[in-house]
Amino acid sequence: MKYRPLANTGVFVSELCLGAMTFGSQWEMIGALGQKEADALVHRSLDEGINFFDTADVYSSGESEEILGRSLKGKRQDVVIATKVRGRMGSGANEVGLSRLHITQAAEASLKRLGTDYIDLYQIHRSDPETDIEETLIALTDLVRAGKVRYIGCSNLEAWELMKALGISRAQGLEMFKCTQSYYSLAGRELESQTIPLIQDQGLGLLVWSPLAGGFLTGKFTRENSPEGVRRATFEFPPIDKEQGFDIVDVMRPIAETHDASVAQVALAWLLHKRAVTSVIIGARRMDQLEDNFGSVDLTLTDEDVALLDDVSKIPVGYPAWMGSLGDDRRPGEMRDIAALTRSGGGDEKEEKEAAAGE
Image 1 (cartoon, rainbow, N blue to C red):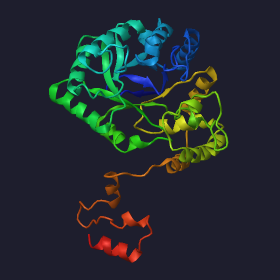
Image 2: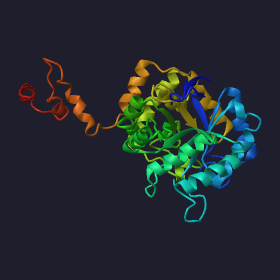
Image 3: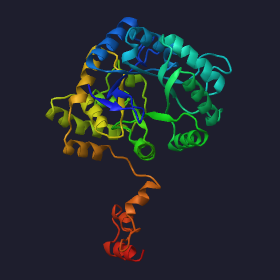
Image 4: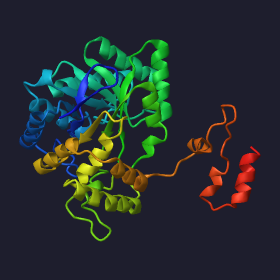
């Protein structure tokens, strides 16, 4: 196993993180694994060198945390445990969200379920429109100062929300998010538009969830066949462009064959090739899936492989990012390439050159 730094914390986490969303009896469409099955996956992961484990209080209403805590008993000092807060944990009016009230209660409950006296990484699961982010950050800071949380992170925030939170933390001397946990895959590259440039600029870590796009990038799905008995057959999440997805898998197959690897391993290796990625969260339900995922760490894609995958999975560049395609006119003698806007549309070459010259 290889390890990468979690932002600037000085803490190193394994390139693969075992996600515990499949642990617990309440989410049958996800996994519904019991203690015995979870123990086997966790202990095998530890043997492989994985030191990073992710869960959330809302996963099976707390069962996931309880199971993970028991599986890691006796290994607490050797691992980095991440969990999340925000989801509804009961029918009460305040048993949800990111208020100081709920965060304080939720953190204590998570500590108890995990069987530990501190959480390494405490993440907000998504934004809360009913609570000012400043209130949330103060509550999280109090937990860090009390020694109950080591570091804080976020998940599923829009880029502007993340930058706003970082700005408030800096201005008020509050704890800062060290990483974001976000959906990113060959079938979902929207993160590259705003969030990845932001985290690279700000020095944050990136934890990737659903790297196989809910199982679509395992190669099980084809235009002619959608297998039964798998999660995406009944629960199409995260949403993807299926036609492009099939095109992506068509490119992945020969790459996998060349490297004597699985399609899933290619999908994971592509993510691990990205410098912005800190750790990829894998959510195996079976031991054979877990073993297959492990192989991605040692799979080295060629530059040609990466270029082919990048090309087939690319998404349209939105505004204002496409303004960058015009080039830079900041230095003396440089011109912006206005013609670049019309080349793909088949415009008249003479008119394009005249437009560029007239800028």
